[in-house]
Image 1 (cartoon, each protein chain N blue to C red):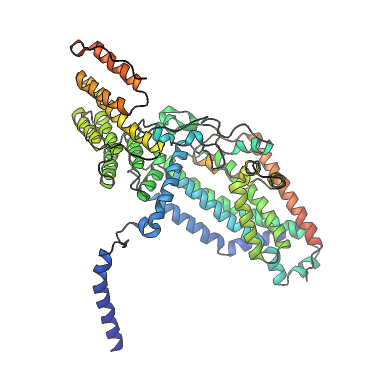
Image 2: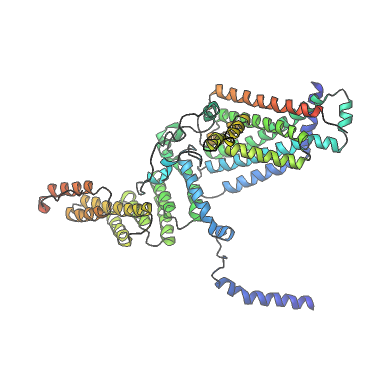
Amino acid sequence: MLLVALLVLAFGLAADLGPQFTAWPGSRADGDVFKILLGDSRKLFANEFFVKADAYYHSGFYPTIFDNNEAFKTAHMAEDTGAVSSSNHGEEENFMGPPRNWIDAFGRHFFPDRHTHLDQGGPGDDLSSSDEVREILPWLKLSTDLDPQNVQNYTVTAYWLRERMHKTDAAYQVLLEGLQQNPGSCEILFELGRLYAESDHDTNRALNVWSAAVRNWHPVKGSDDEVIANNFIDEKITTQLAETELDLAHPQLAIEWFEKAKLVSRTPASLQERIDKIRRETPATSAPPSAAAP
Amino acid sequence: MRNIIAVAGVVIKELYRRKDFYVLFIVTVLICLVMASVNIFNDDKIVRYLKELCLLLVLVSSLVIAISTTARQIPAERENRTLLPLLAKPLSRVQLLLGKFFGCWIACGLTLLCFYVFFGALSASREHHWPLLQYFQAGMLHWFALGIIVAMALLGSLVFAAPSSNSTICFVVVGGIMLVGRHLDKIALPLPEPVRSLTMAIYYAIPHLEFFDTRDLIIHNWPLIHWNYFGLAMLYALAYIAVFLTGASLVFRRHAVN
């Protein structure tokens, strides 16, 4: 009788507390195993796996925390997508410096010792194997699962899936997932526009997506690097819109987009030259070229 | 020589009669097979993450087998009171030490062979090629590194009080060498004297086990290590093995066996 009573009590408590626990904000019972196991500390690991992916991009030739990593501040696999501003300086080929002693000189024969990129053939310099960039994908996927709010994971993954592995559908799904986790992200919308333009050859759709990206862009206040990165993506989107409008024989629209790009660009003079060239080449829109920005 | 081979044979038999190797091997196989079943963008050619995981498990398992097997050799003989009868036979202390060393080292070699065959099969299932010479170099370097570790653990079993403390110290030392051994000279530069000189002395004195860790070369399909440097690494390992075994025999000579 006592056992039955205890079982009834346990069942009643579970039935009563279950819905309260599910509705509780601190509940982690949403099926995400990383969130349950690690909580917010999963974001610490996410960055490590993102760096690991870049190490794989370099076939293991990568600076440790004891080496000069000035040339690896921005992951090269992200920089090579053309959609990320680079903060790299210094020598990427020779971050270890010359051998310091005979032990160091001897030891360099037993680990990767040359700067290569997987999309350029890796250690074998075999351009036909540029699809070996696939090897970075598991680490990017893991990084994405651990930190869904890091938009670079989605854009880099989608770029390489589309560009080297010709898996446009998979790239599209990755970007959609990124937009679900990061609604209105300019970087993801830019990459999605590139997918439509370069892979699907659907220029109209690309223009719509890039326009949405521009509407979602806002200036940020923060560290210099954050401001530069934010302005960089706006410049990329607006220049891409300008180039596309130019290809569609809409020079006036192209000039308007270049003018907007000049506002955030670090090289406004080059954009002004571009505008002047368009005005010269399209008589209907000719106007005295404005003075180059200082 | 026959005495050394006899002692070594007993150690090898002990390895395959105990559960250590089988448990570690099965765990390695299971983990690798589970990770191999993960679907990553429907691409079945992605293999490097799997190779890295497998080689990491092989490294950890081989270290566990090498250190735990070696650390208990002499203490077990002493505990079972078989050490004195052994040495009462025409078996010198040096022969016993060498027998134990070669037994543990060959046992490690056999386990490495099993692990590397599995690794080769796993990577060939995706890459569809067998870089046998690269695997041979990696396996031999790994085996010689284990030789250094076995000799070090054997010396430790004569210096430290218990197998547990010996094992712990060996794991810490080996882990430290593999993680930061290559960088100790860089770490030493900004330090004040005399810590700087001490760190540099440690840098030059320790066996640089990181020479023998060629996982990155295997994972990322780098070309072969030049055979000259491969040979020099073998000689480097043999030199440290000789140093540790000499130290062990000197300590063992002054040890009471009862």
